[in-house]
Length: 253
Ligand code: C5P
Image (cartoon, rainbow, N blue to C red):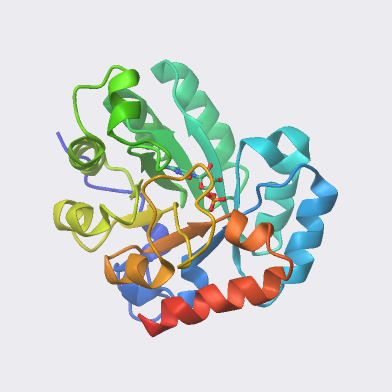
């Protein structure tokens, strides 16, 4: 049975009550910068450099294990939006208890691997809170051969769509996928769920380990509600200029 009270609080526009990410967010709030940095000191420096240009940060494994969880609480309590990219997957009880504590941190988004039981446990644990739960569909660093090697019988596109349907029916707040798949995912999940896309690369930039990449403008055109950008901003010589250039490209779309 689909849950009816999906965690969509962050999509509600303060004046219009709109539950549509594309309309409810200014472009600046749709850029999430991945603080993939080795130390807290470096992350604090990046946030200082980006102040005023960026209002939403993602904290993942690297920073989480170097003081990043306290930093996430600090940013959130100061009114900055935080996406905690913990990609949770465990037995139902462990997922639920983890999510209950993460709700208390005051962050905006949290990732769960899109296994139906893990998603259901997370949705139950976050019920009534404002935490937007995101289902990680298929990592943007994976292509068809990686899927075969990992034992999956689906190609990335097919599995992303299947997991998007499951995320919708379990009551998740959004999907993480490549912007290559955003248009097809949008058709499945409708206008109300977040479609959060990493693997963003401005034209001509280094892809690194990412395989399913899209430019910022194309990601917006494809229906992404939020773009996650790490290295193209945090590894740039001028982080602020890199973020502003990406924002300008998003605006142009
Ligand atoms: O540096 P880059 O822009 O490739 O960073 C992308 C960020 O998004 C990384 O922190 C990575 O862990 C995260 N991510 C991803 N693919 C997913 C989910 C999260 O690249 N499917």
